[in-house]
Amino acid sequence: MSAIELYARPSGDFDAKLVETKALLQTAARDYAAESLVGPALITQASSLGAEDMVVSHLINLLALDIPIFVLETGMLHAETLQLLEQFKARSRTQVNVFTPKNEAVVQFVAREGKDAMYKSITLRKACCDIRKMEPLERALAGKKAWITGLRREQSGARADVPLIDTTNPDRTKLNPLANWTWGDVWHYINVHGVDYNPLHDQFFPSIGCAPCTRAVSVGEDFRSGRWWWEDETAKECGLHVSPAPATSSLSSALTSA
Image (cartoon, rainbow, N blue to C red; front, side, top):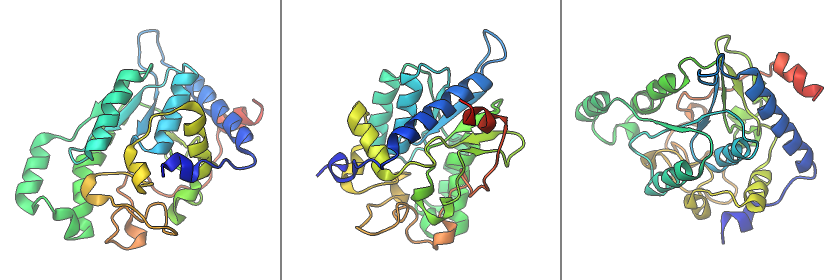
């Protein structure tokens, strides 16, 4: 049974959520537009190519927004994810940028700690994430004043308070347009719009990261229980996202009147 058959059950207020999400993306594209005709947009979407991010990217393309998208190709992604990346790049209207880790840093880390270092300690696992994700992320976000994620409150207890607009970082606003969406909402949108998705979702992978650090989940398990499953629940973030406190901004004020 496919993920669509299993999960595509929209919440009663899905239509209102979709309107809210579209308004947030449109307002963000306007507020963080390029400062000159030849300059880059000051906003970007971070995509893991997971179901949520594919929905956000589809909306960006559907609304013809000037919001580039980036993917972190860590060198440890599943073959299915890499195949989806190539398909996504070929079909996306908006620009898709791929960032990879610095090769020398990866080579030195593996030579020193081994290719299975992530299983040895949380410290080593996070060091691997730093090299493969965090450093490329800094390059991807350089010069940007805002970025867009696919975070949802339902994903885990650590993300239960994810706001639509997070201004806790004074240097860069984080927008989470699907914060209020359920898993059923995500798959309903994918089904209705024929959005491409990672076939691993059909194999009970709700959250997909690097191959060594991702497994399928069982019925009743947390959405992110398949990520770093050997670690304590409180440690299950790579550093890309932390649990923010709800915040307001001029952007959120604009949305309430949109």
